[in-house]
Amino acid sequence: MVNTHILSQKFEYFEPKTIEEAVLLLATHGEKAKVVAGGTDLLVQMKMERLHPKCLISIAKIPALHYIIEENGLRIGTLTPFREVERSLTIKNKYVALAEAARSVSSVQIKNMGTLGGNLCHGSPAADSAPPMIAFGAKVKLVGASHERMIPLEDFFLGPGETVLISGELLVEVQVPELSGQTGSAFLKMARVSADLAKVNVAVVIRRESSFCKECRIVLGAVAKTPLRAKKAEEIMKEGRFGAHIVKQVSHAASEEIRPITDIRSNAWYRKEVSRILVRDAIELAWGRAGG
Image (cartoon, rainbow, N blue to C red; front, side, top):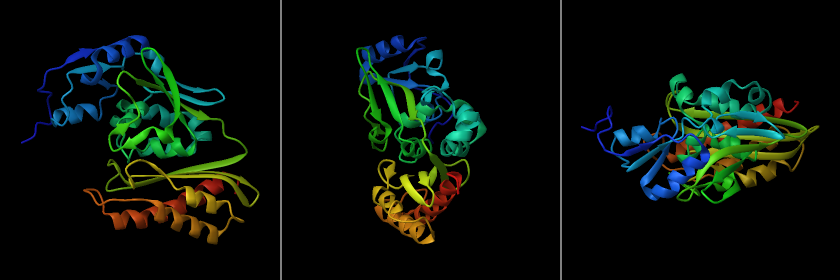
């Protein structure tokens, strides 16, 4: 029987108080170290003996990583829990898809502990925060002991459990650009139960002028090795006057772009069918919120 209640393995444990101290510890311990924030995934993996880090570096007591700031867009510290993202009035009013994604995350207990940065760094194709952030054109700030870099979140994921983070780097901030014009967004998710990971999740962001779509981003999760932008579908969305015929074409195109698999949560055929319906519904919601 697998132990799911206690941590039986031995490891070193550090609680840095600053970003500088944290990245120095990461540089010192290298591949032996794991960063822990809320611990809602990492500690579970350790209890199930799937991970055996020799060193844990907790960033939970670094206040400089915990914030939501509206400044030429949106800046969110990696340590910000989902409950705060869900309840932020700025996010509720302007970045609706992100608020909806935060609302869909498991239970209130997990929302209070689980962090935005942890959800992204886990590298899951089903991460609820990834599709809306990518759809909004977010970038992430990565800091090492002697460098920092900004990359589009769209390029952050490499595969299940894999990201572009290199040894010694820490994700410290997510930056979302200012929205322009008549912009609307929506996030939808299908799961076995409300507290489960997604079978499929979808985020759509649309900027419209009158009856025409000027910009569109459609991002799906749990349907490929990484969160996936449906770029062909996005182009179709801009080809003519908005209506049921366009929505049908776009949702069909999006379902053809994905690369779903069959696993414990769903099968590939179902994911394909659900993707088409969720994209359709998310487009209609986002369009309406953009001024329709």
